[in-house]
Image (tube, rainbow, N blue to C red; front, side):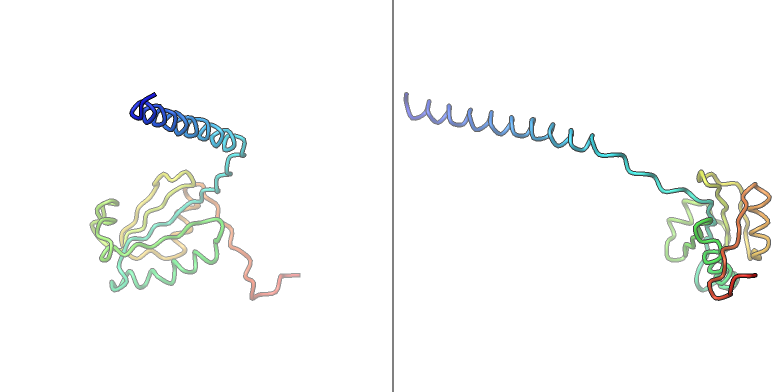
Amino acid sequence: MTKSNSFRLLAAMVTVSVVAIAVYGGCATAGKDAEKPAKTETKQLPKLLDLGATKCIPCKMMAPILEELAKEYKGQLEVQFIDVWKDQKAAEKYKINSIPTQIFYDAKGKEFFRHVGYFPKEDILKTFEKHGIKLKKAADPKKPAAK
C-alpha cells in the first residue's frame, strides 16, 4: 500500500468515525431528553400594562397605583410599566398616541380594554371585574388576621 493510499484510508476512517459519533451521540442525547418530563408551564395571569414616562405628570400619578396593585394582587395580576420616552419602539408596537395608556389583558394574553390618561385604582379594579376577572386583595402581612 502506498503512502497516499494509506493517508486516504486513514482520512476515510476518521471521517466515518466522526460521523458515527455525531449520529449516534446525537441520538443518545435526544433519547435521554425525550425521557425527561416536560416542564410545567407557569400560570398566565391577567395583566395591566401601563405605557407612559417617568417624567410625565399623569404618569407620575399612576406610579403609586401600579405599585399598590402589584403588591396587593401579587400572584393574581401582572402589572407592568414601560417608559415610552426611553423605549420608543414600545410606543409603536402598542400604537400609543397619548400617555399614560393602560392596556388590560385577560389571562390568555388577549387585550380587552384600553384607557388613556390617569385612571384611579378603583376604576382599574372595576374594569377587570366588569370583564369577569375577579381579583382578591392579598392579606396584608403587617395587619393581624381578624378574629
